[in-house]
Length: 268
Ligand SMILES: [Zn+2]
Image 1 (tube, rainbow, N blue to C red):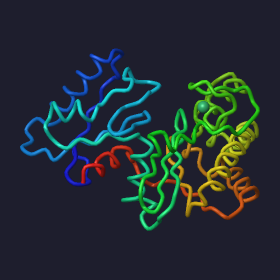
Image 2 (cartoon, rainbow, N blue to C red):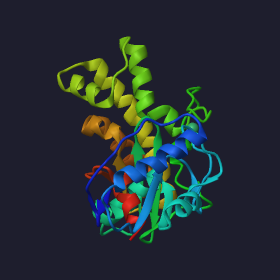
Image 3 (cartoon, rainbow, N blue to C red):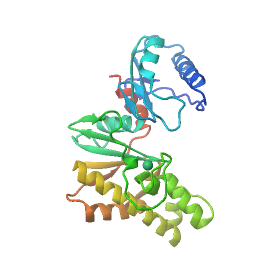
C-alpha cells in the first residue's frame, strides 16, 4: 500500500500452486491491505513474466498463462489497473527515482536467481511485443549450462545468482551467494576470488552485447548479485571496456524495492 511514492504497508504471501488459489490469494491480499482505506486510486502490478497489454503471457514460476490480469483486477476493484513485467517496473523506478533520473537511454539488468532486464529509450520503457528486455536469455557462451527456460549458454545460465550458487557447490561442496563469496574473497580466499572473476567475465560478455546494441548512457545493475559488489563487477567492467564499441558506464542501483516502486509509478 502506498501513498504517492511512499510505501506504507507490505504484505507477503506464499505463491499458490493453482490458478484459482493464486488469484484468490491476490484478491484477498488486496482486500486485506486496503482495510480501513477510504480511497483507492489504482492498482499497479509488477509480475515476473513477459506482459502484453495487461496479459500475463508465460511466467516460469506462476500458475498463469496468457491471462489478462489487468482486466480481472479492474472488474474486481473498479479502479485503474496496470500490469507490467518486474524488471520493467524496476527500470521505471530507476527512471523516476534512481540512477536513470537524468538519463534518456539506459538498460537495467536485474541479477537475482535469474537475470531480467528493462530497456528505457528516450525516457520511455521499450517493451516490443511484450518480451523485450529478456536479456537474461541472450546467448553468450558455447557452454552446455542451461537456464530454467532451457537455453544452453545464455546470460542467465552463465552469470545469474543460480550460476554462482551452482558453480560454488561444485568447487566448494557447498553453494554460496555472491555476497558470501565476496566476503570470503575479501578475507583472502583465492578460490572465491577466482570464481567471482569467472562469473564477472560472463557478466561482462552480456554487458558488451547490451552496450553494442543500445549504446545506452548507462547499464544499471540491480538484484542480489550486486551484493557481490566491486569484486564481481571488476572483471565485468574490464571486459565491457575492452570489447564494446563505445564506452558505457556501469552503475550499481541504489534503489530498494524497485519493482514495487515501479508498480506504483505505473498508476500516476
Ligand atoms: Zn535462457
